[in-house]
Image 1 (cartoon, rainbow, N blue to C red):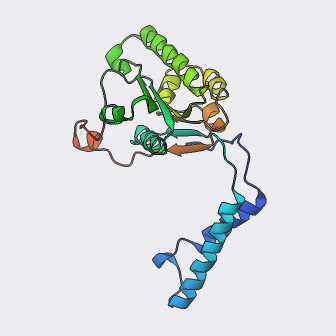
Image 2: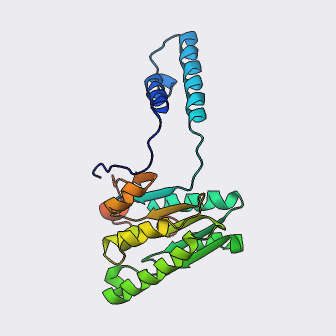
Image 3: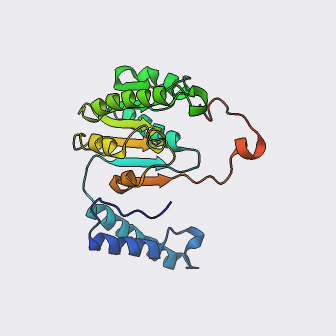
Amino acid sequence: MTAIASTTPAAPDGALALDRQAEELGPGGDLAPEVDQEAYRRRMQRRREVQQQRVGERNLEKGLVLVFTGEGKGKTTAALGLVLRTLGHGEHVAVVQFIKGGWQPGEARALERFGEALHWHALGEGFTWETQDRERDRQLVQSAWERSRAYLADADRKLVVLDEINVALKLGYLDPDQVLEGLALRPPLTHVALTGRGAPAALLERADLVTEMKAVRHPFREQGVKAQAGIEY
């Protein structure tokens, strides 16, 4: 992924200095150079002090824009972890799936037990090579986006997941400006996670967190292993 300049505020210089100290002190274990226990203990004591200062310096609370993109597997899975965590804190969540919709994945069935705390909408009809109808796909994406906008503006939803929206953007079925306008509708403490390959530069610039999944090895590609329940769906 090419480096993208962020439009989000930078951490203060003091916090960045603490970050550098933490990196220099390291995580400990066999990575630390000290041989004797007392010297190691002093290093880790200093590391704890720096960590406590780092946490104290960063006390801002805000709704975050989180982007999971890249060619590797795990983008939707990461967002689903946020869904489960948020529900576990008694908050309400909405999931809108773009593209997907021709099947019911295991996570949708498992999360049904949360009832009205979770609103789940699979509003696509499958991959482009299955639907074979660009205009129909475009209409479904726009319909899914209108549903998404309503959830983004809903203060009752602590987290909104827009699954595979990056793919809809990449295919040209949705304009990045539409998405940026929708993100601006959120109440101050509402988080939104956007998943899928090919996230556009404008979205990466707006995001508070960007994780790029890197494909190192995949059983489908290298071993001919089919999509399996519990792993892919």
